[in-house]
Image 1 (cartoon, rainbow, N blue to C red):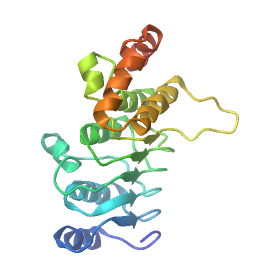
Image 2 (cartoon, rainbow, N blue to C red):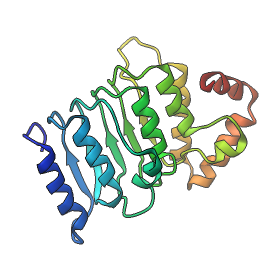
Image 3 (cartoon, rainbow, N blue to C red):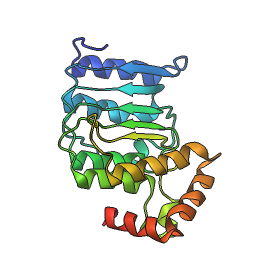
Image 4 (cartoon, rainbow, N blue to C red):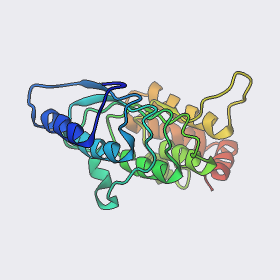
Length: 211
């Protein structure tokens, strides 16, 4: 569906078919460079919990605001029949508020392994800090153990050839590498406690970055 004409009516029809089918599994849905924009993405995002969409690509679609009822955020990508493992939102107009909503939605998700929000130029240091806190919340040992231990790759910023990786990106990479290398989320949580909570230098740096 990339670069094709897509409106809200067609989108709603598509997802009704996907969510009601008992014979469609593991869909890779590519909506790159469509006129999806914010309203269409919000419809799509709400449908992910009960859809067979495994990989969703919505790059350069003009997505700005993400509007999900906060009372229902945890239900969208948690539990139910949720197969979504990859969410690519490269090159849109998502800002820190959108990052906050995404973080709340995927905090307890057990299927999503890849998240790409690069080239969303309205995401500031604060938004990047929220993504770091998602994968390693340093505020307490309990918070670290309850961080997201499923995400294996979080792409935050597109680096130029001679640009150095920021401290936040370094710690996001460290946390997601732990997620990849451990056998299960519980083991990843324990390893993060060892490497950050019990490591004074790392803990001090993470506290500064998440303050």
